Length: 135
Image (cartoon, rainbow, N blue to C red; front, side):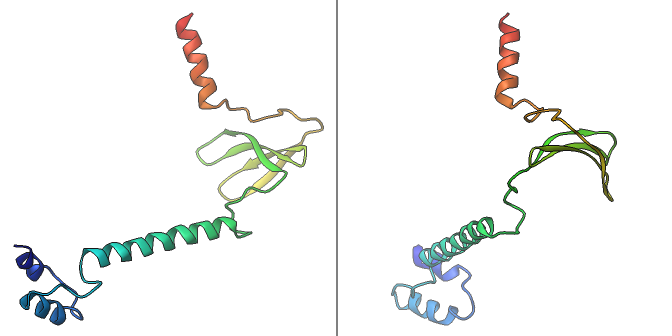
């Protein structure tokens, strides 16, 4: 039964004559033509993807690592593609207008408006909702 399935299975053209001859002779298939070879190739591809992802995260200039001393404090949508963004740059806060085509400095704040991110985390929101429901 297994040899009939192997004989009927599609095999790459470069391996097909050798594999079909081995099946007819009742011998094992050459290495790399069965499930083990496929799994090994899949493992190599997955390892390559993970290795490249690790490398890209470590390289400077990829845009995946946040810059030190620069963070978005809060953001407010004022239109479908327009936002007002409060950015902290080395302790100084800037109010920026951001559109699809440009970024404009609206105001430089003399003292910080907000110290941390304005949006509460999901855990804080869930805790407030639980406290409200239990009261």
